[in-house]
Length: 72
Image (cartoon, rainbow, N blue to C red):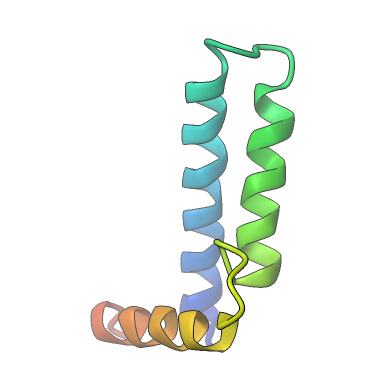
């Protein structure tokens, strides 16, 4: 995995954490950041964001998508 792929993973994890925290803050303001960090960590550390049984296929598709749009 290249550095560019890792940077994209961190960026996407940040988006997940920020958006989920923002959306959950209306319903559970005290837990919003915690849940956002948990969701972002689940994505970043597993690269299997939906917990399906075919995680390798999802990771391969993500890597192909990164290769298509990242110049390096």
